[in-house]
Image (cartoon, rainbow, N blue to C red):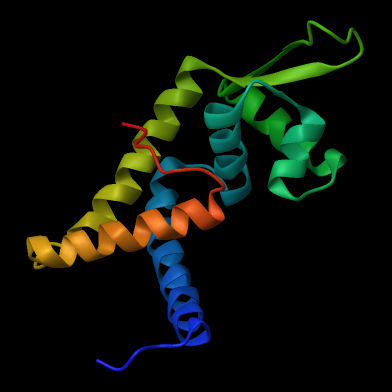
Length: 149
């Protein structure tokens, strides 16, 4: 196989990422939350507790938008607000046990759906995908990859 340029690889990975996200989005429908709420819940589970401002920054939305998202999650019992220990004016958002369970199910559904697409791959092909995933995670995740489950 001819060597590919970094732009050719980037183009392929861009397309692949879109397809993976579409598959994941199909699975997310079963969670019963909007994409925005599910994404914010994910940040609260894996990055929390954090301030509304930090959550808004992580999701690339305005604080007012995040306030509405958090209010909805709070009404569903998936997150709670608590006083910030170091700043009496600030509040922290943290996932509840119910929120963590819902996110674990949603994440598991995504992973299962993607894994089904790999049923016919042999061990060498899975190893290639693993190595590619590690390289991508190190560059875009900003840290070495580690499993969550």
